[in-house]
Length: 204
Image (tube, rainbow, N blue to C red; front, side, top):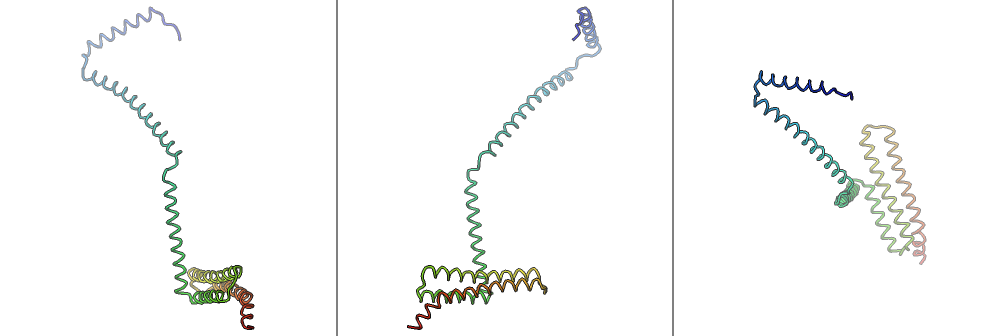
């Protein structure tokens, strides 16, 4: 910075004092203006302090939120377990409702259930072994499942295509064909398992 001559500086201070004295003579000091000026200065200083406190509080709140985000919730696992339990119970309820609908409305499904019950009674009477029961159970369950799928596909196709269309007819025919294949396979398994035992009983 350039150096200021002491003489010029003294002259400037003298002029400033004279200007201040003239201004005081021309205008008397007004207490209200001076008070308002001082209040404004205090408010400015207080505003700066208030803004600093506000920034500090915001920073502290942000740090607390980050800590809460890092910490896992204490009862979150319990809520998930309750929700999973409720959804599982509801799924079982839907499944039993579907089976009840099949029994009430589908004649073919009732026939397959009666055939499965007859197979169980015949197996108990003939004294099937563990492996034979496993094969018979899987075959019977396969036929019943295919019949249930056939009924569901027919309902879905009817809902999607109320009018007669070749594609809808083909979908229903394919589902019915799958049931027929499963039924033929079950008859073959029944002949292989029950045939020799029935033949031995007849010979005796």
